Image 1 (cartoon, rainbow, N blue to C red):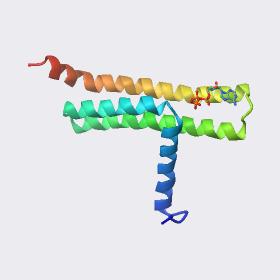
Image 2: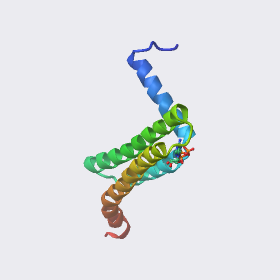
Image 3: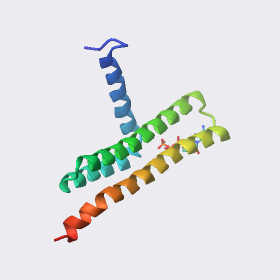
Image 4: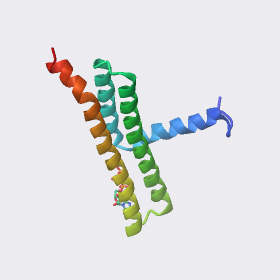
Length: 125
Ligand SMILES: Nc1ncnc2c1ncn2[C@@H]1O[C@H](COP(=O)(O)OP(=O)(O)OP(=O)(O)O)[C@@H](O)[C@H]1O
């Protein structure tokens, strides 16, 4: 049964539809999602503590959020201003840059959190 606009159920349905569409539409997610799954699997195997889990999940969430916002901007531009324009190109490059910055930061967080317990597990006594 379709939910009514303005209800929480309706808002959640819209949000899930957006995520589902972005994942299908953007091949960038086919890089982000497998990496996120590997990190979560590795974190589970290493039996990390709550703070380490929270740090990793926050980093993953922020990368996916940046990618969702970038995808949203690209879609809006493709409708509102489909013609090439240097300023629009700069705006899209900046949004792509935001994803890159967040991805590099998340990779650094992943190394900092995962490396010590991984080395312990592999080479420790
Ligand atoms: N309307 C536009 N005007 C100027 N430059 C644009 C425009 N649309 C795209 N570009 C340039 O092309 C780059 C890639 O934009 P695009 O929207 O194709 O993103 P993409 O993620 O590479 O593509 P896709 O989403 O199809 O995988 C932008 O960063 C920008 O430099």
